Image 1 (cartoon, helix red, strand yellow):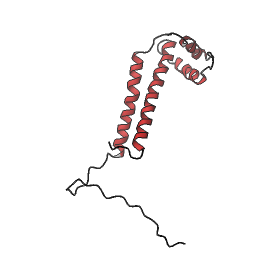
Image 2: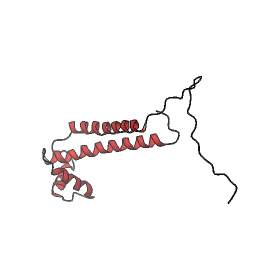
Image 3: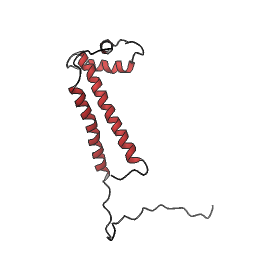
Amino acid sequence: MSGRRKRTHRLPAPRTTAGTASPVAAPLEPRHLRLRLALVLLASLAVPFLLYLLTLAPTVTFEDSGELIAAAYNLGIPHEPGYPLWTMIAHLFTLLPLGTVAYRVNLLSAVLAALTAALVAWHDLGVRDRRPGARPQ
């Protein structure tokens, strides 16, 4: 064995404000951070969903929507590339007992848009809070 000593890591002493011996206020506890993150994610999920729901098309709109809705209802194959995952998820939404089939499939768009907004917010908050040198909150 070599004669090298094993290094031990020590925590830094608490910071103090200029001229006082009391430590600076500690950062938020982890549960407060989790609560804040949960509230932000809930808001980023609920706000887009409600806005999308208020402006949701009640029936078939232009272009391919009729073809896609019919494919989702019958588990058919719309034109290329077919969108198989979307078609199967949309078929599950056609089984909901509310509104017309078109409304139910359009509701899927509202749900997916809200989930996308929440995932983007979650990713942004997670990356920003954990990167080295992030500014204190």
